[in-house]
Image (cartoon, rainbow, N blue to C red; front, side, top):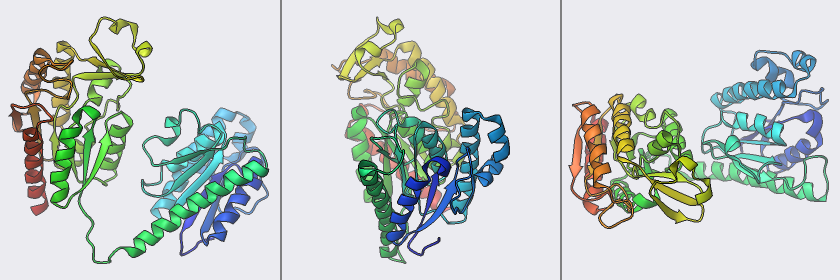
Length: 416
C-alpha cells in the first residue's frame, strides 16, 4: 500500500515471524503510512500477502529460493538473502519508494535487515528491533543512521512485553517518517540548500575545530563535524562518495595513526581518499597525529609496554607516536593528497598537533613533529600548498589560517 504521507518498507522473515511483522504493519498503517512488505524467509512460504516475495529476493542474489532450501545451509541462505535484499531496496530507493525502513530479528534476521538499510540514504528513518541490540552494534549500523532497539525478549510470538516493545518501535518509526514529511512541507519552496562541509574533530583538537566551524558557518555553509574515532571518518568518506558533502576541512587526521600502528580508531586504509576522488575543495591538517588510541590500559598490546602513554579516561589510553611512525605518517598523508583531483591545501601547525603536543604537555614532541613535516615535504606534490603556521593547532592563528584558505578555495570553485 502506497501512501502520500510516506511509505515504510518492512523487511523480515515472515515464515517464522509473520504475526509480529503484521502487528507492526497494522500500527504503521493506522498512522496513515503506506507499507511495502518484503519477505526474506527461506524455510517455507509464509502464506501472507506480500509485495516482494522471498523468491524475488533470492533471484536478486543470483540464486533461487528452491536452491537455498535444497542446500539447507543457514549461513549460505543469510548471505544470499542479504545480497538480494540490498539490490531490491537499492532499486526501491532509486524509484523513490522508501520513506522509512523497518526490520526485526535475531542475529540472522538483523544481518539481513542491516544489509537492506545499507542501501538507504542517511537521513531516511531506519529502525531495527533486535535481540543483539544491547551488544556490539557496529557490524549492523556501520556508517548509517540506523536506530536499534533491544527486544529484551526473543522475537517469538506476541505477548504483553513484546507487544509493548513492537508498538513503541512502530510508533517511533512512524513518528520519524511523518516528522520528516512535515519538515519537508514546511520548507520555503524558494529556500536554497546550503553547501555542506565535512569537518573532523577530536577532544584534543576541539578549540581549533570550533573556531573554524564558527567562521565557516558565519559565511553561510552547513558544517557536519565528525568525531575521528574510525566510524566518524568512515561516515564522512561515505557521505563524500554519495555526493552529500561539497567541501572538506579535515583538521583531525588521527585515524591514519591508528591504521598505521594498530589502534582502535582506524577508519581503514582508504581514509582521505574519497575527497581526492570527488575533486572537491580540501583543507587538511595533521590534528592528533601525535597519538594512537587503545581502550583501558589492559587492552594495550604487550609490544607497546615501553612506550609513552597518557590516560585520557578510564576506557581510553593514548600512546605517543614515535619519530619513525611520524615519518611514515607524513609519507602516507602526502600520498593521499597527491591523488586529489581538486584544490587542496595542507596546514601544518609547527607548535603542536594537539592539546597534548605543545610546550610543557605530556606528548610534546619537537623531534616527532619535525619528522612528520620533513616527510610531508619530501613526498607532497609540489603544486599542493603547504602552509606552516608557528603556533599549535588549537591557537586561533591556526584556526583562522585554515578557515581563510578553505573559504578562498571553495569560493573559487563555486565561481566556476
